[in-house]
Amino acid sequence: MPDSISQMTPLLPEQAEDLQDLALKVVQGSASLGTRQHPVTLRTLRELLRVINSYYSNLIEGHNTHPHDIVRAMQQQYDAEPAKRNLQLESVAHISVQRQMELLLQEEAPPNIAGQEFLCSLHRDFFKLLPEELQIMTNPDTGQESRVIPGELRTQPVRIGQHQPPGHDSLDAFMGRFGESYAPERHHGAGKLVAAAAAHHRLMWIHPFLDGNGRVARLFTEAYLHRIPVHGFGLWSVSRGLARRNDDYKAALTWADAPRRNDLDGRGNLSNEGLIKFCRFFLEVCLDQVEYMNSLLQLDGLVERVRSYVQLRGTAMIPNPPGMDNLRLEAGRMLQEVLLRGESPRGAVIEASGLKERTGRNLLAQLVAEGLLISDTPKGDVRIGFPIHAAGWFFPELYPVLSR
Image (tube, rainbow, N blue to C red; front, top):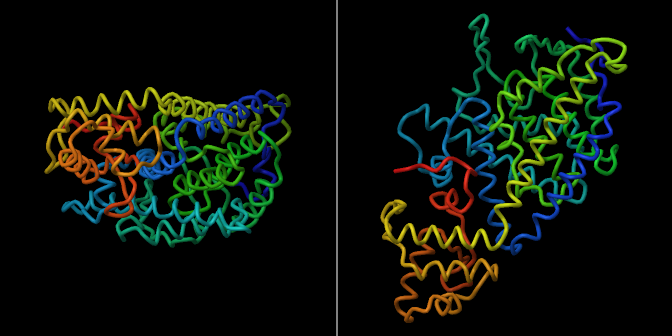
């Protein structure tokens, strides 16, 4: 069992210049996302992606709570079955913590996001929102149940597969070294993103909490990319990429857990080659997600998919949301008007439809009722919405579309 903080070395991959090049591609590609759509549209998209992050983070844990059910939970509509309700509560907790975390990072003097205090706060804020049933950890070998104390480091030894994390008595020392080594201000340029990748693994390797380590590591990584900052982050999801390659993700974590093999495998206690492999995998996942969202946010393509959705709704080839009618084809012109402008007066949207005033008002009211258009006031300007029943058609493969 590791008891010396030197056993966590190397803290960064050594002799891996190609990782810097890969990280730079991620940074540049992510920055370009902010130019693809109007800023108002992108703000709405970020709200949707918090739901998507929650869905995929849950999926990595083996909890499949569909985005439809997550949105229902956000509207206080919970499943009657206790197990499904608990997983809905888990999803809402994740979204709540992510939103609070993002607000904290906007403050003038944000905390050291690699520090023990911040990491424990993520754990505390998440677990205190969970139902009691999800605050119990069962030892897979002994069947013994232990209660997870929100925000507290574990007080007992654990074993994760073949990996033996540091003993609980030495966690403070490991967390101190972690906080000092991975504080974002200690790193520069694209190297900050390489540090984020390495820190993701090393936090999982320390396994500081009795349960919830993967969840905290992913929230921490979100915080790190916001803090660097990677411009455009929030318009793509690390968790989506990791979940879609979950087996590869777990294998990559195992590579980086491995001890140093020989004199050619770095100078630390752990395998430098294994850490390089993990960081390369992590950065490739990030780049894949950046390129995926770059393709989907091209304005012409998004307008075409929105209008195609309206057309399919008009012929009932896509099921209507509960209580809603088929959409008129003119709705496509309305949505296109708002996409092009970011935000539009209601009169301009009705005019763009080509319909008579009364008919146009009724169609506009339907779009607002469905969440395809959003307004802060009953008569105010409208902006595009991405309701969960339509967003999967606007952004293919963002999440599984329910057929019902």
